[in-house]
Image (cartoon, rainbow, N blue to C red; front, side, top):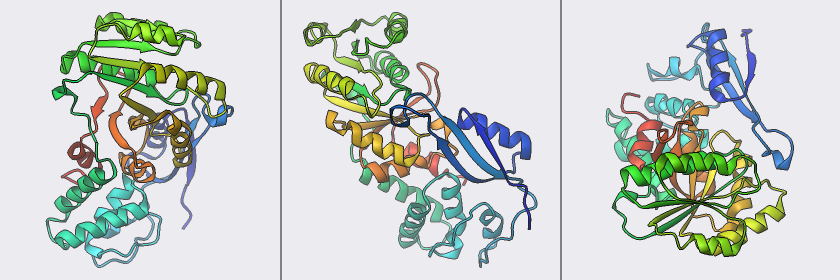
Length: 344
């Protein structure tokens, strides 16, 4: 059967999905997605474009054979060989894949859930429990529990250009000051990019917190004398090939003695670029990941894929540009509910 398959491109996943919905309606079938990286600096100098391949939801392609009465309608949107899982749990597998959990990982999670609960009514609850267990195994320090912590913290954010470090830093500052009641100060190591310090200064003025912009190790040491129990450190966006900036940032970070270094990683990047980025920033001593732009992906299941591939503790996710909103602590129960909701 000949389907009206089309490819749509836009600057963000949200815009691309809007084009799909306008063309094919809310029943559109997503056949594939990819991020077209921009040129320069290893593909990280700026933002690329998002491409979605889609088709009308009706007429639907013939479903795969199944003994489950619920499987045919769901199976229409999954274009992969049926995995070796109980047929009655296939709809749960389809929903995971539709939420962008990698197919092999989705099948493995389903098998674990089946081993715990069989294929009865409790399969959905068992699956959410398995997802929570997976998150705990792959990120044993998931979340930050910052509200109850008393010891001083120095938290540095690092990452490629355009990953959202400065905006995320402002969100964290608002969280620590307004919700956790911490004494917050900001330190910027990003003095070479025009406008960055001005943007951070506006946030600092709104939050009424001190801000220090530094360029030398002596200036870093002087800034550390500012009273605070939570110091948030902004760094310049570093491309893969900018070894000079990398070395300079590493030296300033060592002088700041951060207790945590969070890699700010866009969820919308391709898996290959995410892995390459994690390897590139590993020498800085990355301890956690903040996954940004979760609002620009089709499904929150990408969180599990990142955990499996990188095996680095996840601290937060961001779901938009609004400060201080659109920031969530990575709680395993909350993430599990986003990936396989109770009504799913």
